[in-house]
Length: 53
Image: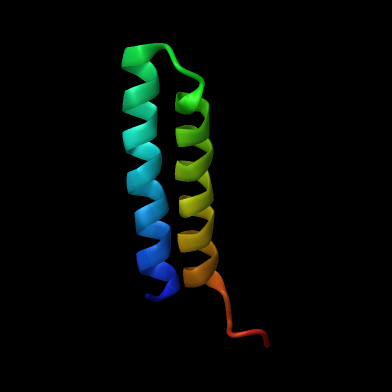
């Protein structure tokens, strides 16, 4: 599993938790939003990095 796959998995899990939290009025929706943002940050930093130079 590479970073891109991990970030995509975080975003999908975040989306599932967001939908679950929306329908059940559960605080899990906030965790979903955080996971989506974290996955997006991981994907963005992976693309813009210059391999530590």
